[in-house]
Length: 119
Image (cartoon, rainbow, N blue to C red; front, side):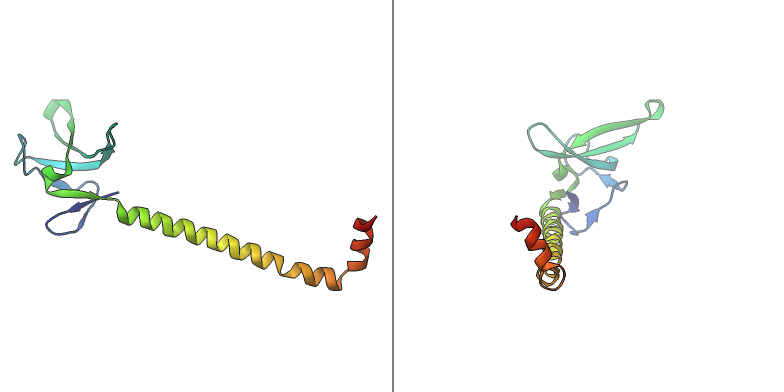
């Protein structure tokens, strides 16, 4: 999953500073940490800001608070493409492994192999 800006359409990388646009924290800047999934299946943006002696203060926001959205279609389609390419490669390798078998049986020791298994 990726965090994408609704205005520019660019992907937002981890560690980038975002400005909160709506809600009680409007105008504050936060550092984008990661995308977190809640128990109900909704994804939120996990962001932090400096907190003085407390270290960093972590909080989760809805992506629309930053004017962003979370896209998952590209990552799912990429994973499906990679999976299919691996399956396709293994099917092709299996097919290529079976091709020499009839030639081996025909030219090398075929009578002997049939005689052993024919008993």
